[in-house]
Length: 265
Length: 282
Image (cartoon, rainbow over all chains, first blue to last red; front, side, top):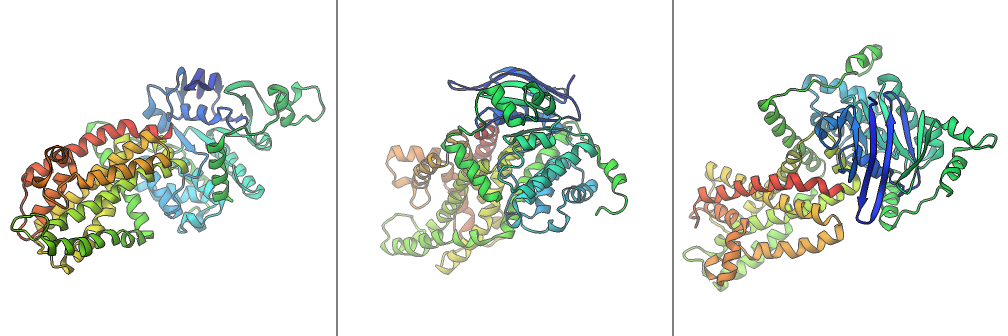
């Protein structure tokens, strides 16, 4: 069985079908990208896989556990970095890690080693004692990934990990995400609306629009599907959705994104 | 720190932590995680304690202005007890209530930030998340109690400083904070939006306060209000505080009954809250 699998998974909010019969399967060690505009249903799909949102119909398994019935086992097997800022600005970087280490049942004798290791791995060792409200956007993102990697999850979910970051900080986050897979063989499932991000990181991508998965494949395979030399993923997206990649997100969505971007920037 | 042996160390740490099982280990884990959530709040307070001072202004006004004026007018029949003595425990309970009600809005705020999501995705029992946040309110309320003790002494309230009574006051304050913090979190999880919560929070806080024995005895209330006051947990918190805080204080319902009500309501709310709280992210 694949490490991550969904079967006809669907989620409705009233009359709106946010995720519409999505079936995907991800193999261990893959970096899988879910690509689509804001409001395509990417976050809703992630929320169902990490047990935050029960599916309306359909099923999903993460690390072999049914998300609807074995929520607690699923939660032990995964790490999650939400789109919004989830590190606590009122605490230091070290304290943020300490709290999560305790919640993830890391025994006292291993705690310091795992925390220091996560700090070093994410390049934050020098900033451990600083308040997170004084961190830069890229540092906050790296701290959040550090928080989610201490318990060595089998699958790491990243919801738009580089939203609101400048290009330098973005590259640093990409580099660290790549190392997570290389060093620990972690499976990484990320959402993005940046073609460049999917190209740089993902071994396979699924293009999602209006709650449906339009196509799945390696970035190269998708590009070669359209009969044009040096096609970009942007063009692939237009080819499969008939639309430009832009954000139809409503007031609330836009407000949240702008705020996240402002806080990170 | 990572030195030359980075790879070796990474290999050791490549495994997830070992997990203990069995009912005893599960209970221990529940208590530990509840305390971790509360620890987070204590650490926040340590970094920025200004909140404790700003929140002392309101009870100061109640005690120094309202309390002293009504003590002079003797408008409220409080038996052989002076009015200022009668109302001091009520002001403490009120100030705890106002701190606790704020936790609903904090939950919505943290939901918008993503903090709640991160905790819900960790292997932490929902009830521990709820009780942990409730104890956080208790952690904020305790320094408040200290300030109110000082204020009460300044306006001449006859206080009881016996150690057991002080411990009892602390327990009552924490239980009261837990009840109203969870109440507020449940409402936040149901209404989900900040603007809606602000309105509802206002509408609830004042009735909770006035439909209780905080600043006047229940005996002078009309029957319908008396019924509400008897269903209001704040009444039992105030009653317990009145018995414990004052030199000649006495409880109407008995300390044992007051604490039993408070503990039962906390347990009930933790169970309900554990079910409803995760909905705040949907």
